[in-house]
Length: 342
Ligand code: ATP
Ligand code: MG
Ligand code: FE
Image (cartoon, rainbow, N blue to C red; front, side):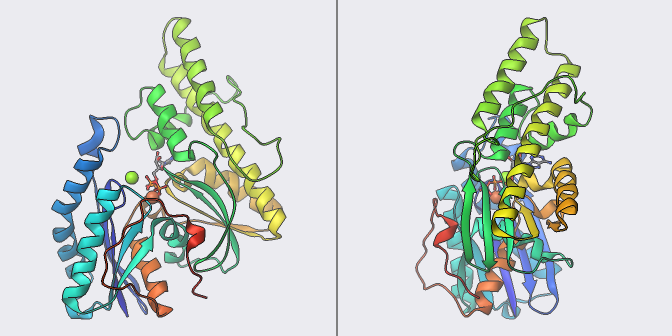
């Protein structure tokens, strides 16, 4: 069985084909970063228009790269939410129409379930149950995962998401858009002993996060440097380093707490920030201490992509699920409302 997956929730158009026996056959990603760069953020209307422009050529390319003809595809999965409503509508209409034209089922997939299951695309994949740390541009969540669709939210960010905090801190450091990966790269050159940023909420019990205080602390430090003369390249690297240390150690502390609370030793990290090398190293070391293991997707499947949507769709198809002919998107959609398919 073969599933075509389509991702259009934000500013990347992702398309992929997943095969039950042979795994991922082909995937393509088109990023709209250049389109939105001069605006310093994603412009929803431009995002929708660009998805329309790129979907058809990408689908053709992926079909041919995967050696599939239309009749080889058994279902079409598309991102149904959460995300930008117009961008979601483009993928949903396109996916639903393709499925209708080909006479196969369509499956609306939850974007965060896609992220969460992305490590399953690797050969070294975790068994259920496990704890998942979802750290992306819009979400920071700790989830107990018992199986596909069986998710228990243990904690989440009360304000900014981790990726959003990275991007905002990067903006303060004038690193451009999107700044998360740039800040991470700069952090490696910083002096870790110069600044000591607070670790938000680690002294309180529970598994929730808050990153807005850290953002203010970063802004105050940037302002202090500017008042002392100018914000030098050294200052920027030192601030980036202190900021990243604070985020990473906060995430590590909460992951440890979640694993202990749930008596589990398998941790999955997914979403854009799971590409962060310091986070991976710190969690790897922590899980070594706990006698457990951490699993993550290859870097290109940490951020948005079509492969994770094709795979999540495949899991739902395998369980006998599919959608009716209606086209429905859910810009806001708690992952805990999903049905388990175990
Ligand atoms: P969501 O999935 O919550 O809807 P999104 O799809 O916009 O949000 P992703 O594509 O999963 O988010 O991830 C993008 C985020 O990941 C951005 O905020 C980006 O800055 C961050 N990010 C990517 N690489 C890194 C890195 N190496 N270090 C830190 N942050 C990173
Ligand atoms: Mg993106
Ligand atoms: Fe995402």
